[in-house]
Image 1 (cartoon, rainbow, N blue to C red):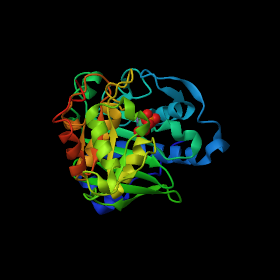
Image 2: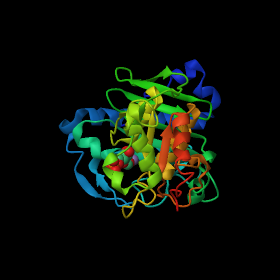
Image 3: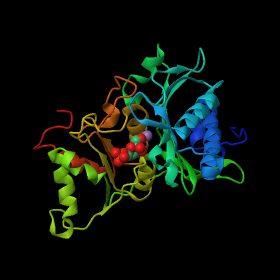
Image 4: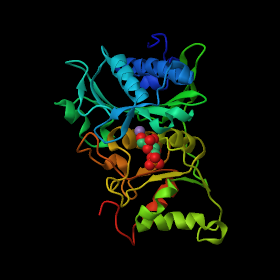
Length: 332
Ligand code: F6P
Ligand code: MN
C-alpha cells in the first residue's frame, strides 16, 4: 500500500523543484514517491514477501514479465488515479491506459527496470517521463522527446533515491525510510567530464557494427593504444544503476544496435527508457545520442520503439559519433 505521508518535501524547503513546477505536477510526483517507497519496502523484503522474480508472462516487446514487473505497473498506475496524470503509457501495457477522462499530463513509464536483477539482490529502478496532454492519448507520447515537462527515475539499491529534472538542472533525493521522506541530497548533479569508465555488454562484441567495435577496441588497448591511458569497464545490466553511477562519477554507456535479429535498433526503448535518461543526463551537463544524433531530437513514432543509446560524459559521447564519420550509421 502506498504511504500517503511520503513526499519529496525537502524540495519545498529548498525552493528548487516546487518553485518551478505547478502544484498538480508536484502532486503527481509526490504520488510517484509514495508508490516508489512502497516498492522499495517490498524489494527490501525479498523472498520474505514472495517469489517476485518468477516469470508470469511476456510483454508486447517480447520481454519476459516477472511478478514484480506487474506489481510495480499496477502500483504506479493506481497511485496516479485521481491526479492530473490521465494518460499512462507503460512498458508492461500494449497501449495507452486512460486513468481519467481529463487531466493535464501523460506519463511514460518503465515500472521496473533491470528486472533480470530482481532475484539476485542487485539494484533495479523505475524510469518515467512526463508530457503535457495532447489531443489523443497516443499523441501525448508520439512526439519529439524534448516536449517532456519532466523526467526521473527511482533507484532501489542500498539507498532508494529519486533523480529528477523539470528542465532546470537535475536533482537527487534520498529516501529516509524512518520518515518516508525523500530528502534533497544533491541540488544540481553534474556529470564529471574526466572519466575512464565505460559500460557496454561486451558479450555482443561480434554482433556490433564497425564504429562501436573500433571505439571499444581503442579503449581496450589502454596505455599502448590510441587513447594512451587505461580504461575500466562496468556492466550491471540495470539501466538505472548504470545511469546513477555515471551521474555520480562519470563515464559512458553504450547499448548500440547490432546484427542480432530484433536488436537492429538496440534493446532499449525510446519513450520510457532512453528519452527520460537523456533528459536527466543532458540537464546534468552530459550528452545522450543514438550514436550520432541527440536522443531528444528523435520523434517517437510508436510507444515501444527501440533506439541505439549512448550517454554519459559530454566529450566521451561526442567522441563515439566521430567513429561513425568513416563508417555506416547505426540506422543504415
Ligand atoms: O530494460 C532493459 C534492461 O534490463 C536495462 O535495464 C539494461 O541496461 C539492459 O536491459 C541489459 O541488457 P542485456 O541483458 O542485453 O545486457
Ligand atoms: Mn527497462
